[in-house]
Amino acid sequence: MARQPRFVVPGLPQHVIQRGNNRQPIFTVEADYRFFLDLLQASSERFGVLVHAYVLMTNHVHLLVTPEASSGLARMMQGIGRRYVRHFNDTYERTGSLWEGRYRATVVESARYLLACMRYIELNPVRAGLVRAPGDYRWSSYRCNAHGQPDPLVMPHDEYLALARDADARLEAYRRLFCVEGDEVRDEDIRAATNKAWALGSEDFIADIERQAARRASALPRGGDHKSELFRRINRV
Image 1: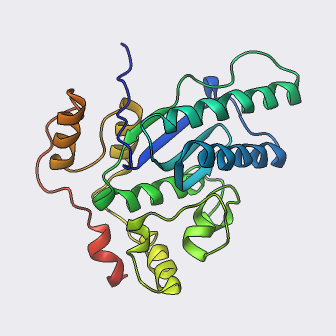
Image 2: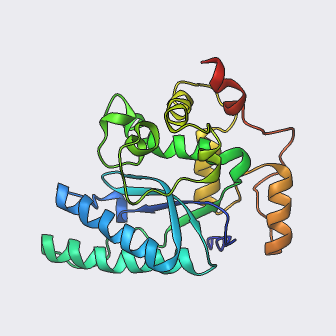
Image 3: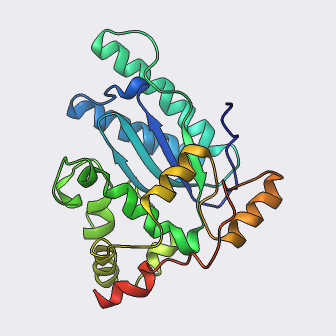
């Protein structure tokens, strides 16, 4: 079955996944990770795409970004993809495709789901059993978002900045997000929306995206208020 076209809404965050072909490794040594991050920074600046969170896993990449123009994300990913494949093939004396196919992406409702999506991205190494805590993993934005470690790639989103006025309090509030379990924004919902090109958000948000795109933006009707418990509970942890 043909994959759904992606939703492109300038100014709205997108969760992006790019996987290696047949889940093969796309990073082998430290230089590979660094080269990809350098490409990501240069391309995001060139095409007007703000990067809020990222993680580079062995065989795939997660990004949370906001494109400022409708073509920005696609142009950024195409540019990174071509240059990184050349680097990887030349370095390891191989030929052919490196990527599983085109990248997957979902538009994210910032007011309710953005911080949950950031947490999902930065917890990937923990879920994969690579580290015990997200701060132990080098190739993600967690150390920047949770501990203030300088990272020229990361541009804070307004929802992140709204966690607290003071920088230290903001970092502490962000770390508390990772102590909360059982949030209503489930990992399965984030994965499904991204893999199937649905919108990730509330009923009203999805309905608005459907009106703009003139097509279905969710797999099934969604009931109830999906506002995350995450934001109501972080101050009680």
